[in-house]
Image (cartoon, rainbow, N blue to C red):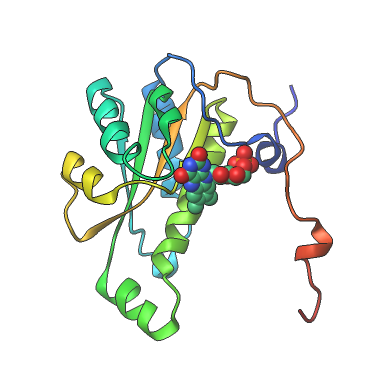
Length: 184
Ligand SMILES: Cc1cc2nc3c(=O)[nH]c(=O)nc-3n(C[C@H](O)[C@H](O)[C@H](O)COP(=O)(O)O)c2cc1C
């Protein structure tokens, strides 16, 4: 069988909001985190930390307290057998001082790179994911005992999709709307 290219995986990936009641194997979890570990980061600071939540009771509380008590209720997340809480451990020099000098929050870029690595790896392994950016940080911090200096950046659901991942047309801007040569 022909090996899938990065573009094949990118085209196959979509946000999955409905999962089978089937656990995700440990080696698959480790592979997706390994892909995140190899991401680039500003000054190679590697601020990412990942909490893999798969205990059913902790998952229930995570969704109830962290995802349902907000205006955008990510209720569908109840079906996910795994939720990865992506955190950033902020370093004074690279992250706080760097952001002051350059007005760019490098840690968010670093986290974005690592999370996308994780998501693409999951897609290659036949797993579905959905990036969740709407959550109640305070409640999740308390539930998972995350220290104050560690910022929660995103939650990613992970599991076997109810509907198999297939290449589908994506609603996106056209290349001519986003690509510029030599000047804006
Ligand atoms: C930073 C970020 C935050 C997001 N937050 C949510 C969210 O809270 N809930 C949700 O259902 N989807 C969320 N998404 C998924 C987007 O809605 C989705 O990626 C987009 O609509 C494109 O669809 P696709 O992922 O299927 O290609 C988020 C995606 C990103 C990158």
